[in-house]
Image (tube, rainbow, N blue to C red; front, side, top):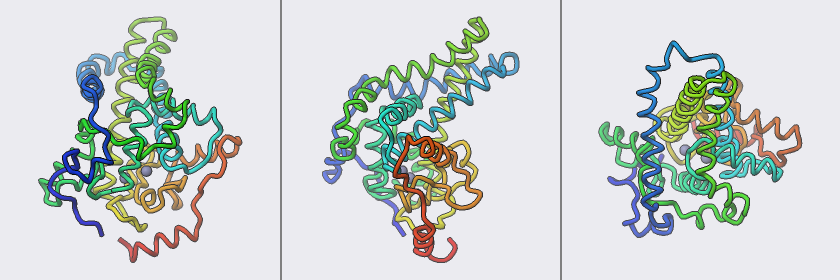
Length: 321
Ligand SMILES: [Zn+2]
Ligand SMILES: [Zn+2]
């Protein structure tokens, strides 16, 4: 059992964290982060009532689902299971495609994302974790504050995780450094792409606008909150049938929208495993995509779960918890 962290979240002031962090974000990048978090939400508050009912078309729905699926899988299969945890090996074209698709989820450039997430696993729910809901203690007030910190607050922290310590393998790859630098371009494409398609198919500015609102803004905001919920909700509640040294839980209601990422207890118990939903009925769309990539010959050396290992992890967790 892991005890709660100290009173304050990790900061660059604490000497033991200096090596974990690499300075602070430049002001322009920091303002951009605030804009990414606030502008889509504000725009939605204005735009959704305007377009709700009269203008949501099947085209908008199809575009929103398609862009959500591709960008979500870019993060779950690409950024998370492949780049962060190396659950499988990928051909070079698949490697670059996954990096681009994940970047279009607008959750930060790939090197930032991977470095932050590896730090999360190295210190999960302990001092040094960038986004633990237990960072401020265990009282109801501390947990409310911790939930906010784990869900969104940590993103507004200006300290940057040290990529040389946590992602040297990705830093050494020229293609990935290029994808990382072009984060602004992937952001433009992910927002303008649906608008362009909507405008061309309906041949109208209104069609472009509604596609932008639903398949651009709304899709990015929903995906943000689902991804952040894995950090916040899945470290607060959920079943813990496998032994992990943190408070990660399996939260079934998020399984479909998170594409399998909410089977988070198994993930922390066995981080390199390519499948997170390992029990019958635990839907894991990301694992199914990796299976398809394997069939196509694009993914090899996939680390599928083995019954022996699952039994060991489950036995180590002790009786039903
Ligand atoms: Zn976690
Ligand atoms: Zn992980």
